[in-house]
Length: 332
Image (cartoon, rainbow, N blue to C red):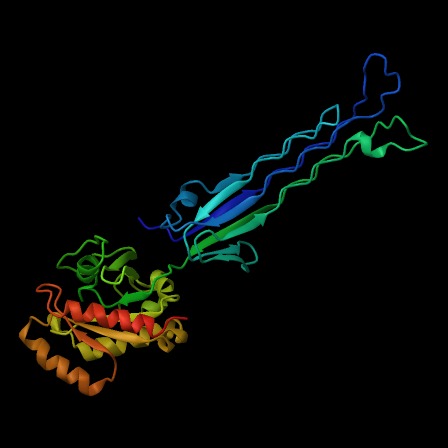
């Protein structure tokens, strides 16, 4: 199960109370007040960590509290500060205030940090209230309460390439062939139930690209039909969109119609997706009907297209080189 959205209830630590104390030592008759301050409460901090793939930690444990600050002590001893609670989230996590719905944070790069809730301040000990007219104050202040909040964490994956297509076009097979991801591949629709993030290694360049494989879309996906609708957000941040087509037209499909329908679904979900560079992987070129369909496609559409076969691995080398060029032509 892939957890890309969850609700959490968070609380920062309360500040410790200030102390009322007086110095009592032999041979020092007028020791005076020496009550220490309370310690500050811990903060709730978000930290972006690329080693985390989804939000499952917060799905199964939605409540998180930072530690309270310690109370002040005599002899001017300040209470211990409360430990922060650090919530590690994957790159691409957006945090929304749950009730109002507005965005409060977005973490994109590994190591980014954001203080979501501040801990309470420690109270003052009685030493702060000493004056010429009040040399033995018996007053102190309590620590303030830590902030609390309820939030919705939403993950939008960050990848160089967003792979989309209709069921059975070969998305899982292609992802498993060119990346280290091992998605389920089978000869029936909807074998991909969750987004898969795979890494394409370019060993000759000592570099890599990240590919997001989105569950198969169907007509009407933008209206919450099928499995792909809730995962379309995972391609919003991709530099390049890669549409994979069953160029052989199996199961009575027409690759030209599929391409048009997929572009329409992307545009209806978010018109900005159509502003991204869109490339095509023409899969199943080992089938006889694919050659004729490819020629028809090239006559109808002008876009980068690579004929490939996930079964025979035909054209994969040229395809990977073309992907590298497409992504790096659109860096930034």
